[in-house]
Image (cartoon, rainbow, N blue to C red):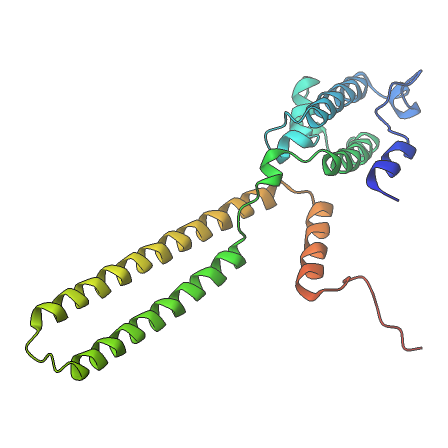
Length: 224
């Protein structure tokens, strides 16, 4: 069953109801305000996702600090210990928003650049190519030098040496730019990783294991 089918059949906890849940009706005024702020923020984010107007991952999920600010209460009061039902409600809404995001990917998701591993492979390939290129050119110069008996042609040798130096410098600069790009992507990945919840990090680790090993990390081989 596709994500779209699951979303259509799965009841959305933020849809308009005839009355709030029991834990809201029996809760404090602060709980009621937090619930109302959560529903309003969910509908705002849902609209952003569907209209493709969200700018980044933080615009596509409910943030406790934002909800606390909307409800005009201290962020420290919005925790699983103090507001267990509300935090569970927000967690389920974020699951729905992740599924909705899969149906409406944004431009920044489509235009994902090369990964750090891909850049490292390219840097390695360029280094090997640079070494082969230098060795090949040096061999060609020596062979041409002796074959043509150009022992006195110092100008030609100087020009050829300058050409090799320029090409080697260009390749060295390209490697340096790729290494800087790899470091930048690593910092951006670390920043995005800090925004993920624990469950999202677990899901991301599972996907990485599948991509690296070519199999589902949750699958076990039972020999019994």
